[in-house]
Image (cartoon, rainbow, N blue to C red; front, side):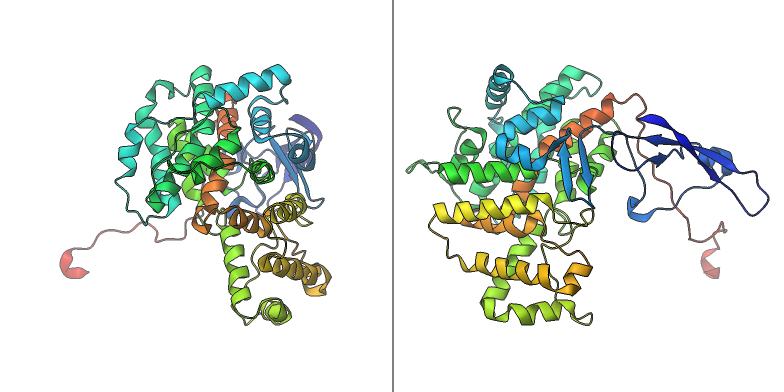
Length: 436
């Protein structure tokens, strides 16, 4: 960042001297006021619930322009990356800052694939969970447990250790997600097969069995790869901020990523695509397309508890750039699998049509987001609804680890310590038992 010619002046009406705050500019996006010395100079904090107006860090990884509906990874538009690159190329970009050439890609792909097995003892650890445990509960435990098996790469002050941990996490996450899935179904785990692609290997571990192999459909493979690219990073969202805050204490990378997985599990974050699909299935079971108009009227009724899931976004105030790509991918997958007349997709299209035409939704900028379609694609592939958020975690792992590594490389980084506006009791003395 660079110091701007602008300066901000904070004045008080109690006669205190005004304070001049420096303003910095990034490469794109809003300027920021530097308030690091505010408390020392004035004795007051800022108050910003949800950090709606606070930049918590300096980052060069991902940029979002919510008004334009723009998402950039290292400066590259998500629309171009999703069409021209595969997921591991995107991982390389997020980790290293530039896209790989042919040799760099081959070496990176080979490195990741050589780390995709997990320690055999993790199979026994997994057996401690109930068979009906939610996959995200299982995944949180498995990721956190990695530090007990791979403690040779947990020195966060060592750049080589951080690189090894990053590769291990990216490589092993598909194996862990597939293990969680197989455990729930009571099927044996499938070991990775390195002659397949990253995404193809994951699909095989998910759906093959020892008695019947799984032939990877190229359209499905590319669709899932695109889902991973679209979810790889998304600036300083709740789970990424959690990873940074957790990692700021110097904890090992596996613990920091496990914290991100736990945060992602929340229905307001990673669980949104599951919620969107549940909404579509409920609507389909209660009248389908014929009831869409009535459903949308209920959504508009402020006295109704009905919510429209998969529309609108905390950051995007325009059409989510990932949603258009996801809609196209949905059509490709359903056609390839002979499901082009899928009733849920028709229902989704009708909901989108009304939302884009009805003034109520237009005024509130409630456009479809990426979660609206990704659930339909995963359902068509055969991924159970309960596993959707785990797939999200698989994709986001590279973003988390890139952000974590960037934070640790920043000479200005400090352990996170948000302030508060205290509204509890002032100091008071403890009364004797009889006087309470």
